[in-house]
Image 1 (cartoon, rainbow, N blue to C red):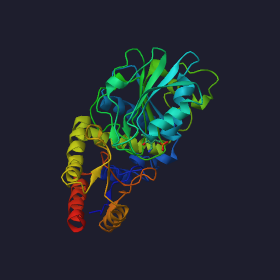
Image 2: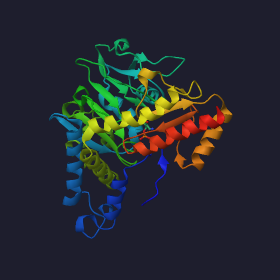
Image 3: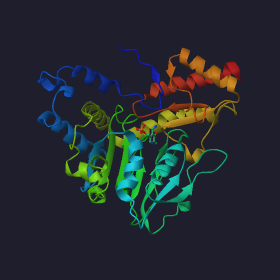
Image 4: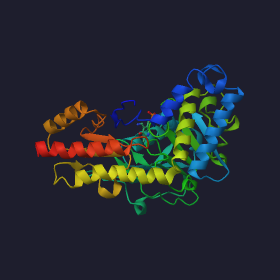
Length: 362
Ligand code: PMP
């Protein structure tokens, strides 16, 4: 049996063991061709099969109707922050953004380089971190789109419902919670995600969008940064990040074999409840950073009552096989990232460790 760490890394993050094992098996000889998937042309029938199947699986898992396309791009989700306004923000329109934390802020700042922006709603300025109420989100008629960050990886907050935007296209940065729960993906004109949390390794960014939304990019946009280039070429305009896409393919098959999004959701709720309950039942020893109604089932952020205690917590957790519990450098404190591939057993072990740590230090 392979000894695996209790991996709570925020990203790159845990991948399913079965996926790693299959990749290992196929590493030097992909499906009997005598070469690895990294050593063949992206124009080969073997790679075209991986590309097409991965696109299909993603649409199927998201339950999307026809008319949606899947692209495998490079440059991380951060490049999407720029590609969105470059391609979609025209002179008479505004890009509307819901400000929920650091990632939303980055997307919003980037859009300001290209055109007019509009702040549709914001989280609380102070106090526990939250997601604004849907009723507080204002979408102007001349919005080219409304952009939301479905899960704020650093804050540990998550939208539990998405706004109805009428005729204004809804765009979601789902980098840290794509495929973690069931939701009505058809509400979105576009979803994007860096793969390195819930989908696979870094190196590929997945864009899922209505074809009609992305097919007409302005001519002044450089070829590689035009969505239309990638739409027209079925995401094979230039050499794609083939190995990353291949691992995404295996991860999607793993999600499907395990019951799809509703099973992922159930598991994620159950395993994060172990940790959230430990926080809530600690009599204030542990404190969640997010308001209860905005808590994420992907990133649990919490603190202890002093920096010394937090340092001791990290040190002891590492000695006990836990990895990645330090909060993001911008907010400090503690964070456990519990993506799809993080098993229930890891969360159970963390909850037990937290209870024991409290007994010894409370
Ligand atoms: N959006 C969110 C919500 C993220 O969590 C991250 C990465 N942590 C990004 C965007 C940026 O992704 P990338 O590193 O792939 O550019």
